[in-house]
Image (cartoon, rainbow, N blue to C red):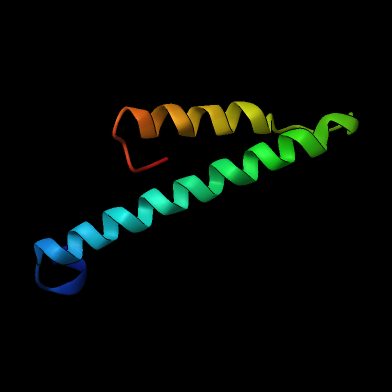
Length: 66
């Protein structure tokens, strides 16, 4: 963060980590929603359920990144 903003603050870093966590939750929710919707689509190249499951596992391990 210092190289981007020119300084480093612990509070700013914590906010950034919270934003990453919320983004992962959003991606997980989106994946689960599309997992249910995409069952009728035959030509879908992305496994939404697998993507959501991967994100949940990462969050459970404490990783706030994709």
